[in-house]
Length: 555
Image (cartoon, rainbow, N blue to C red):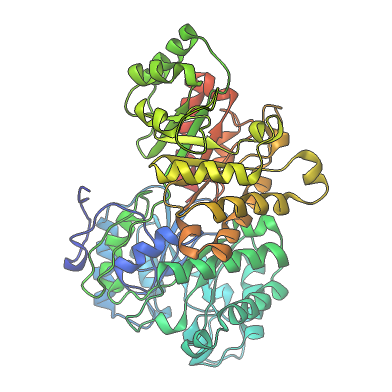
């Protein structure tokens, strides 16, 4: 990958490559890894390079990068850092916040570009008064602060702040209009005792009991054993906790809050104070940064690239197909989207020979094994011979009209994958199943059939298509779709692995069109679309492909 230019970079970051990003109190390479992996948006937290600086703007729909400078710096070094930040080139679609020590907040506020917001590293539980050494929310607002970091492990474990006290701070800050970066995380002994989830859920409960709303809260998961130690949770470890925390929110607060709340990861950023400008420069990219790091030998690379498939179903003629291909060839498509179309079998060769290489070809079905005496079926070998890279399997029309069951579909998927074909694995519930509250049961049953059959998930895209929304003009709300996507990802994490859950794209299908795609694309766990009728209209399909721009902003 080409190396991107860095503003205000340091030697440790001079080798940055495009990839995804995730930052916090941690080392750059691992930070990046985590950034892609974590089943949520960006978070930062501390003073270091990829300064995962513990911050994220909840509900803003934007990528957020925050730097927690902790108890570091002097007036001179702070002036130098502010100067570096002011001269840095920052992506426009990123909310950026820094948290200087209290004594430098006014200095920073008066000299830092308005492009970057100010956070406090703590606040008091109520109005000011006889509280020596404390800073009130009113004082912070008077200085122009917009956020406060609360519940940081250093205040929990060094200063003895308990869950209820932290919750009280959060409630007051929110009531006065300050955003809260709510920190949670376990000690090493708690992780080793298998209590990570218990600890995080206990801390989450204290926030939930105290706060009236989650609209202006960002959750920062910071494993205490990884803060300032040079250690970092693996992407899988971080992702596992993020999935669990989001699931906790869904079950104990609401699915809407779970889908909207940013969960950021706190990484050890040993030199964030010096290198924060470099981090900011990359924060807006939707690709991953593949950064060689002198402290760790692993680098990052799991970016969930947006995926849009067009299922032409049993539609079209040679002439209409030629016109559609012409429209697609002339369309301007965002570069960071995997685009695939699935023509009827009889037009695959025609489309392959005339469609731009920018767009891949998928089949709408395939057989369970090698070709032979199977009248009307098409083998994987034949599809590969025609240049197909994907096959749509388990589509509801084949399940409910043609009677294909879970095991038969799983067998097809296993064979296609074994022969190098990617699988778009469709799942989804009937209207009566949704109304009976069985949506998750149905989707999990269908997922299990794939999981039992396939040897690897490396080349699988899951397509959630509620049957009641396919071709009906009805569409699941963004919240309904997100709720199922989160649940499916959680199922993968618990039943396959956290790594698979973090890397597998889950796309939505069901009356997606040019009018509703943008709002759907903003949902964090919607990684693209499987499009039916709208894919037969070149310009509208291009609009859907380009809705990735909404995903970038929402990230």
